[in-house]
Image 1: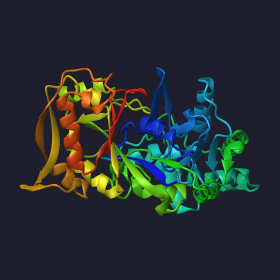
Image 2: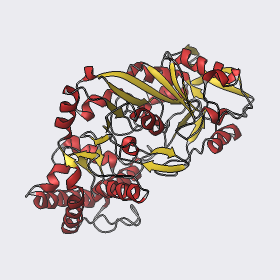
Image 3: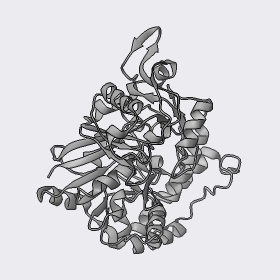
Length: 437
């Protein structure tokens, strides 16, 4: 059976967790393949809200194997806290979770670097969650100071920690001065105690050992056996390190480009790409946002959509649906079908706007600019559609939606260039409309 990938097409927070939870029923394995604990997926079942950062959303389905693959960077403390929380909520976490021994590990020095370099950068903040994800990826590609999860179980782990801690201490002292660093990083101790770090991570290793495996071998065997695999993306395509709004992006390939590299499966195995979009647009952190509404309309979207970060609680910036951006990421990802999320948030708006093109330097363009300086300068060109006043949270068939809502969905489909397969009209599993693509 071919694999399926769920890809966010905006700046993240598209409600991918709900779609993964729904599609898991049709799959045997769910794989998280990139990012770290900066991602936040929310699943609502029977009125209970569950929040995930590292564990795949498939954890809520019995008999489904969840895999955290080698492309993920792992905070052991965050992962164990997530496991403990799920168990307290009555969710089984045991043999149904595998974690790659190739996954790179986040250490205290990574969080220090996050704070330090954000402070030194100046100008508009990138918007990091300060969880050490970016610096961990830096070390991964730098190689010399990197630690993978499998290293925690090797005899030379303590020596590795001592070497890295010494190098990091010299780095921090050189950057902020040995005499006084308190004004640079208030409340953060930049003097790494290698022995303390070693003991802490030895404790994590003891608890995580039963989950750790060669997931690349496991997934390749699953591919050969024809098992049904669902690949769960984190963040969104516009945050992709190579193809997003650089430098205001995440530190991994969060578009469809990252699936095979992060999971370790052959490209031809994935036959279906599901693109997830909100019925409007949001983003967190710095960077240009052409359709942003810094007014009462934007606040109304924020309040109705509860647009506050799952992980950080930061208020999200809100705006009208940007079809230029969504078409770009849909083409980039080879998207086969769309899932339009949070349509219910748009109820009670008298009229709705969709950005269909940009004006840049006096000319109309329909392509997404590759440089943020150009994206900052664009003027969004809108098409206005009538809204609807009805509550649609109980609607379960497309034909029973208000005609204005049907037209809005169909217009998005036309502009993005992919058919709509799923429409979400509320956070619950049951608040879902399945369309014919």
